[in-house]
Amino acid sequence: MAQKNILQYILLGLISLQDMSGYDIKKLFNTELSDFWHANHSQIYPELRRLEATGLIEANTKIVGEKLEKHLYHITQQGLTVLHHWLKEPLNDVPPSKDEFPIKAYLISDAKNPILMDLITEEIARHKIKLIYLNNRMSTVSTTDTVNHYGHLLILRRAIHREQSYLSWLSAEKKSLEQLTK
Amino acid sequence: MAQKNILQYILLGLISLQDMSGYDIKKLFNTELSDFWHANHSQIYPELRRLEATGLIEANTKIVGEKLEKHLYHITQQGLTVLHHWLKEPLNDVPPSKDEFPIKAYLISDAKNPILMDLITEEIARHKIKLIYLNNRMSTVSTTDTVNHYGHLLILRRAIHREQSYLSWLSAEKKSLEQLTK
DNA sequence: CTTATCATGTAAGTGGTTACATGATTCC
DNA sequence: GGAATCATGTAACCACTTACATGATAAG
Image 1 (spheres, rainbow over the protein chains, first blue to last red):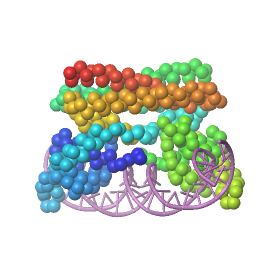
Image 2: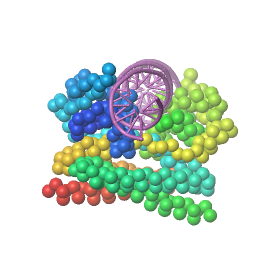
Image 3: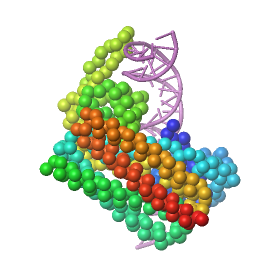
Image 4: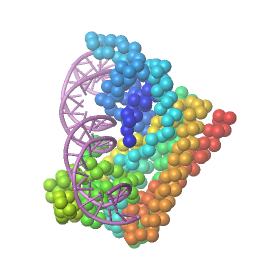
């Protein structure tokens, strides 16, 4: 199965939260959604046009300057129906993430290979940075109007909890590997 | 960035652990590697031929029956060089996983929408099953010759720790959502 | 007046899935 | 002899990335 064009539902969902342009959506994927989903503008714009063509969204188009068209999309009744149907559908299986850490660790196999220790050290550094970034995000989000956006806070808490817990596991593993190899 | 054909390195790495056929690799992706990486046979076989053509692996081919060729690959010196170079390279950024849970949660936004509670309940059920599966895997792996495959145990422990920690977070969030909505 | 950001579009190419296709071996 | 699994291959298609391309507006 894997992908049945999930992007279309996400676009629908974002537009349902508030009217948006393709550019607004692109910015969301680059900022507060960056840890949870991503799409490039080259994927977003054609998909929006397709959704418009099938009547799930509609655009208020205005021309700025000589020829540039700005599209502000809003969701239609039909779009809401499709969105709610998707939201209520069972979650699809999660394909393995494209994280190189576990597969590299598996391939190293020998505990005494120094590359393994390097790998764990790098992984710790990488996730410390991510946790700092997420904590910053949390502090800005808590002070904006997004306070009433429960889902947003929920997934931020989720990401922070995951990073904290992962980091503590990593340092425990690092210690036990140090014991093993010394 | 994203993908620079990571599969080639994984194939190289697996063959470096022990000589393997494409079919063996396919089976690994369907069993003990299934949580960490995946590829279909339609992707594996052509890639193996490409690696063979570039001299990173070599095949012992034998014909069984009338015409079916079985290829047992082993890694070459050149292949080992390429593999070790990749293993020592810094980890690439992890693209967001294709997990629908966080993006659905974000899109629901309103804590009182019952779909959110359903979603969390479903997520808990889904991950309980996964944890049971991982624990089973751990008990079989610990009793096989794989005991000396450190990396394998490491990523299994990682996955189990992640599931346990995620499940406890989920039930805490579920309780707090119940308080909020009643 | 230049740079950054806003704003949208398409084309080429790659990674990955799904489907089509064939044949061998083992176990019941 | 039929089913399950072993074993390999290709073609069509889809999701997604990268690159090319254009133009508008705001800030310094």
